[in-house]
Length: 291
Length: 291
Image (cartoon, chains in turn red, purple):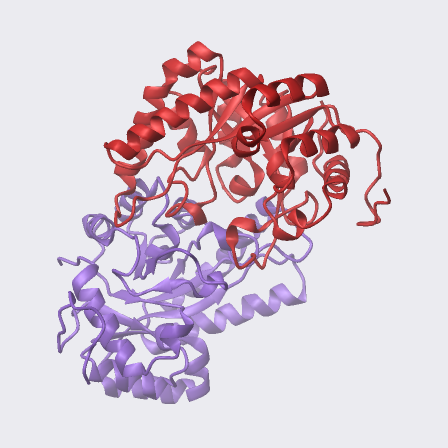
């Protein structure tokens, strides 16, 4: 395969040993395809999503991952905890319990949680945030028993109404610190937190508490896509200062896998092996990992 | 004029005495049209923009405002301070000095400042933010002499790269507090800050320091418009909890005018008098002003 993308990038044949391809970056690939593409492009780790795992079947997925030799960096995604008490909330808690079990079975150290947006018709951010904390409190014993860290992912504030009422790393840590660090941590995703004037201090705080459960990278550039959910880019194609943020995450003591997770229609429409190679090479040239 | 918009709204013939129509809400109106519409809809205050004022001519604008009996709640907008030292930066500082003089001449107590985005090709948020602070330091003596408060407006983090590297009220206050409160303050604009988990404490901090230079309201709803700049709505049409935020702003001691500033193509395409009436009535029914 010929890589023709950006002259300044160094084409490599093996991926950084800590690089993980998050399945969402090749959203339309089956689990088998995602595994084959990751191995073929020299990755040692993959970030899984529940839907393709369920499509393949959990037992088959466990075997396929085992046979591939890939590590599983995380399982995405559970959460969506903002609805009030009732049947829907009970179903959601049950589904999160299943996600914890799936994470353990797949060998994923972390389960990524998205808080959920405001319930329809509600303007009560404070109440919604309390219900996120309460749900995590319910799930913490299951996570501890399973040896899985619940990884709260703050999402960019532009998603605060419809997707995640947890918008900053500081907010995620305020919740996580109510639980042991191996049970609840936070995701540092550059796309969501790069703008935060408190980012450096909150990364240090997360590191000191052993709370960085996942480091995810992709880039931000404007104008945003018409669907802002899909406005993510390969590292180096936007304005995020990865050199600084990665150095802060490393100084905070995080030594785990680093996922590239990109939601972008044009990337989803690109052949999977091309995406895996471009992801690998943009990571090598732009993300600034030293460890 | 018949108002047919929302059955739950109370049509009124006079506006709340503290309500100000920000000219951007009727963007295509000339200054004379904006004044006539505001007076006709019972407003006592108007928020001016520099472009329509310059188009009318400053002296003519001063006379027209005086003759109308309207207060001027603020002048929008100056700032854009993130470029490095050089001719462009000097031009910008000079233009900001002119904007301070215009504010004083028009009787506007506050000049709204937008920080500016990352310079082209830069990823250095910290440096850009320092240059914002430095520019305000240069302008502070002019503002003090003119009796105009420089009102730093934090913009929503989705604009951090291309429009404003100052994204939170806390960040705006960190800069403002380096200067006397009558010289540098902050704008609380619900659209930009509603999501912030630190909003209540930062409004209280701003109030304690006498730093709320302007309170602006409009609503947030999703999905966002394709151009996220234009994704603002009448109060009550989205998810912002105005009752809570307005109560916090009032408890913080702010007693000045409250501007409705809406960037929205559909509203811009609506007859001005209809917009002025809908703004007045949505303000009355949704913004929760008690003072």
